[in-house]
Length: 243
Image 1 (cartoon, helix red, strand yellow):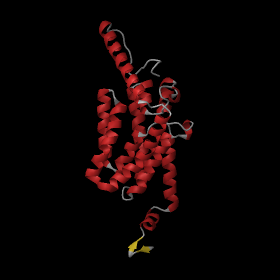
Image 2: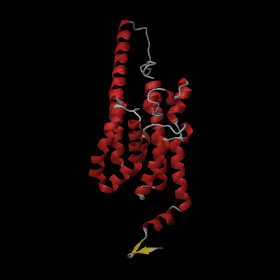
Image 3: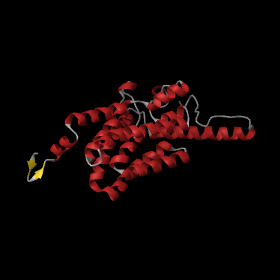
C-alpha cells in the first residue's frame, strides 16, 4: 500500500476496493444509462411524438407532461431517478465524490444524449436519483419540490426552486463534503441552463407566457366541462401552439 505523510493513499485504497477497470466501467455505464431518453421513448410509444420537435425541444419529463400528460411524465421521471442512482450506488456513498462524479456523468448523459442526436433534458430527475446516494437532504428537498409541483401543476418551477433550496439543506446536514458532492452533480445542469439561455431557448418571459397559456386552457376546459358534463378532455393535452 502507498503511504503518504504517514497515511494510506486514499486513491490507492479506492483502486484496491473497487478496481481501476471496474471504476471506469461504472463511469461509462453511468453515462450510457443517462443517455437513454426514457421521456422520448414513452412519448413515441404513447402518442407518436418526438419531444425534440415540440415545445423548447428538451427531452424531459416536463416536456412529456406538456405533450402527453401527467402519468407518462411521472413514469419517465421515475425512470430518470432510478438511472441517476445506479452509478453512485455501484460505487457507494463511502467514496462520496467518486459517487457524485458517477451521478454527474449520468446527468451529462441525460442532458446530451447520443441516442437523441446530442439533445436531452435538464437533468433534474437524474440528479435527484444521484442525490439519494450522495446527499439525502438534497433528494428530500427535490422530492418535496416535485410533490408541490404536481399539486400546483407547476412542476418545472417548483423543482427549480427546490434545486436552489438543496444548498442550505445540504450545508446544514452534510457540511462542505456534501456541498461539493451536490455541486459536482449539479454542474451539467448549470452548463445546460447556460446553453439554453444563451440560445434564447429558455427565456423566463417565454416560459411565463407558456404557463399563462396553459392556465387559460385549463380554465377553458373546466368551463366546458361545467357547461357540458359529457365532454371529456385530457388535462394533459396542450394546444398545437404550446407544443
